[in-house]
Image 1 (cartoon, rainbow, N blue to C red):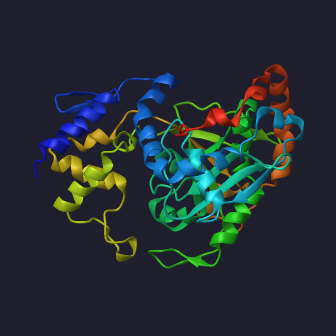
Image 2: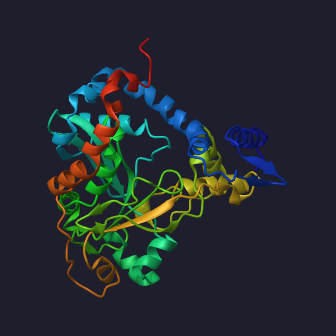
Image 3: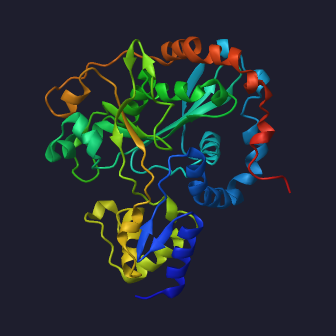
Length: 375
């Protein structure tokens, strides 16, 4: 299964991203500096932008018109509205375009997905985005926080979703809008939208009925320790609870133009590993595909460990979320936290004071956010 060309491309790409290869081992940098972490992700981010250009570049002027100039924002009047993103809509294009500005590559999510644009009703401009997708099956710090056994987790994981993207866009990001968007992920409107979309459905593999109740949201920081989620309190209660850090594994360092070649190699040399017909006929996920490819090339599967550890947060949506998820309670005692209430709190606590201390947000122009120069 030797493929010296692909092997060389993989090694060259990793070295270009700053990884060292010694005695067959991938040596990640010991980095805590966020600027350097952005540099490590830059290759994968640019690849996603290059791929998207042929589809989205022609829409860019229209998309930019949905962003606010700084002078169009009144911090004391910011009024967020959640707009659920529908498939094949202009909103879906805007959602995808917004993710391309993130400093890390954003996946499209998998399995169940609920996506939102956050629109400021004072000017009808985009404030930020929320994307929820199915969580990973095993996540040690999350599972320890809940108190799960493996069997109960298998039954109740359907009541958990992961925020795979969560943040504000300029000029709202200059006004600590990221904290507002993050807190809105815990709002009643998000919980109810999820239930409306998924109630009275059946799980794919086991065929069990799902009532659509969402008990917990998880998310991870982009770079190590997070300031966006820390101290995000509402009604005196911490919304985002830090439960630990990831182990520093993943596949972003292969999402840079190489994945298609690695996927082709794996399909040609390995038998698909999906255990259930309902999962499809291919490999289980991207990580499994890359792992098989690395092994086939004679490289260590430990190269999936990139060393970038991210802080893990859990957001209970009810007073008894853990008891419910452990199967010890049949009803959820929901927290009351509406979009309007959260917005009022954040405006007063963070946004208005920031606008007075630092008026930089007023200088933002949507044109400066352009990804692709006009040709």
